Image 1 (cartoon, rainbow, N blue to C red):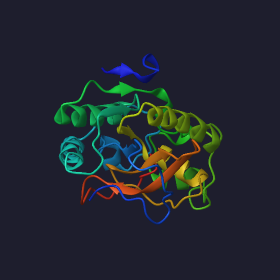
Image 2: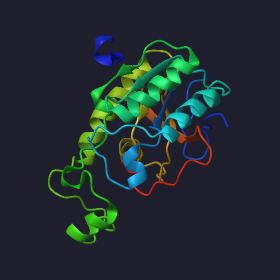
Image 3: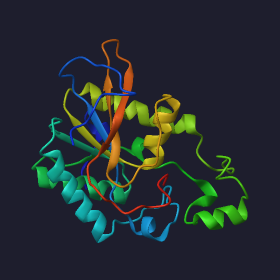
Length: 223
C-alpha cells in the first residue's frame, strides 16, 4: 500500500504564467492520474475508487520513462489515496527505483456529490445548464475547501527539500490553479504543472507539464 504522508512530517518550463524561484529550489510536480475505467465511460468519478485501464498503466510506465530524462530529477513520490492515483504513482515509483509511495487524503479528488457516476449528458438532464454556467449541486465540495487541503499538502511536500512527484486529480489541480489566478485549461491523463516556494515562502504555480504524449481525450477531465 505505501506509507501515509502524515507519518513523516519536454522538461518543466517556468515561463508565461510562471513566477521565478530560487535557483535549484526543490519543486513539486503534480499530475493527473492515468486513464481510469470511468474516464473511458465518460463518468464523473469524484471520490469513487476506480481502477486504471491497461492503457492507464501503460501511460504511467511511459511517464516514468519520460521523467527519467527531464531536468526535474524526481526522488520522492506522493499520491492521493484513491486507487487510480495511487496505482499510477506506484508504477512510476517502481520504474524509477524509488522508495514506497506515500499517500495523503488531502490530495483526493473533489467530492462531486450527486454527480458521482454520472455522464455529462445525465448531469445536463438533471441539472440543466449547471455545467455550462459552472454551477454545482448541494453536496459538491466547495472550491475553497479543495484549495485549502490541497495547497497544505503541496506546501508540505515542497518543504521536504526533495523533487517530489504528486499524483492527484484534474479537479484538484485545476481548482488550485484557478484560485491562484493562473492560467487554467483541461488536463489529459498524466498532465499537470509544477509548484514551488518562492524566497518569501509563498506557494507558486508554474507552467503546464505533459508527461505522456497523445493521451486519450477524455471528456470528463475535471474528475
